[in-house]
Image (cartoon, rainbow, N blue to C red; front, side, top):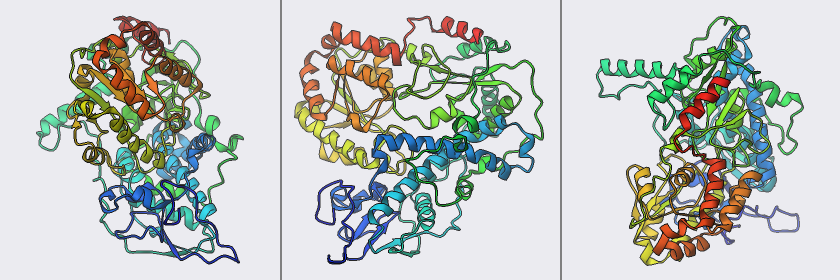
Length: 605
């Protein structure tokens, strides 16, 4: 739209032609949208311009023109993930040399284990912003735009990887800086750059504290030391305690891993498997216009910079396997211990810890970090599209504790659970793009309109937990639907006690609810949540059984229909067969046999 068009357009204003009136100068906003901005003269890089500022711009979704979103094309999204993996793999040796003068004395497995989670996270941001910059240049490169940049010498200090996610990947200032660098390197002649004064009127997340396992700022030094020591001991187990697992289970599984490995090592060398120099260039992704190393360096957290690296590592002749926890993504000190383990020739395994594994069509980070290890334990599935990995299906202790735990047959509430709405496209996987998330949010309103006032008054709405750089959730929906009540406190008790659950996305809550046998109605736009062929087949079965629907309105009609007797509807044979097939593939249950199944499998590895 050009100031008078329709909502959510990603089409650019028509380029100027010699025989056409020259369009007025426009401002292209890369960071926070200035208050009072005129949508007839201002172009927005995306919904990120309004993150944390929606209250100042009523109807911004329909008033402003947004840059095209290249990742709405599934083929481009798939290639972008491969490009990010290649960029990260290529960057790791250079980053290692930057972090340590004797980097070459250590094996590649050490540096890959240490740097992969953070490197691929930064690479995802670089590739997505690069594609968005290229799309803006292609659409608007001939317009005479004034573009506000931020200086290259801005100094960022991220405490750890989690802090980078909050204030980097989801931070307005860092993204403005990243767009500035990418556009400066490929600047259209018609554009005019300027460097406005940076203001701090856009809320930013506070710096995260490095993980220490302590008891918080009010805890005594002795208590903090005890907590840190206990945490280090638990993380040092061959099989540390994972979510939903008891300490006796972790100890038993650790004993099952004390033997030398029996079979071949399935670990992937990241440079060989993903590096762009191995003939894996992605033709849909144009080359970066600049050296990416300074971009990685600017995003490097203090937790990585502060590490001390060994001079050498002796190689073992009896490799063993240990399991890594999800803390490997956020705790550099813990990951350095894992890196020493891998550098000596031992092996690592990861285990599924939530939803979307095995279902989403594009999996950038998990394939690079977790599937590349010797083993990946799944909750039932054995194939994730075309991604490589040694997938070993086992029942999840987390889900085993929920098996048939639903007790809401006489419940009074409909529970609606939403998900994250990031205004920055920071995941590079099969989540909706930022503009698609605007539609996703509007679909909530359509659902409740179709649900009717009586059931609205019985509904508990559960928003995603607050994060920076996201669209408003409950603050946007509840004023529009004042009969809804906000669901607060732990989610699981509410999920197990509701009469009917409604989900507008797939994820961990879906798997937990399936394991617990909670009556549910699902809906989402398939085009915005692309799945693997295996995931699509499962979704078709849920649709045939009347569980999943393609639109919010159809799901609301089904929720109204089944509400009076939700328990008996859910126990019908067709529903239970579809649920059982879904659980077999995505939320495998063991009927109380998960411990022996895990122990036998671990002893055989």
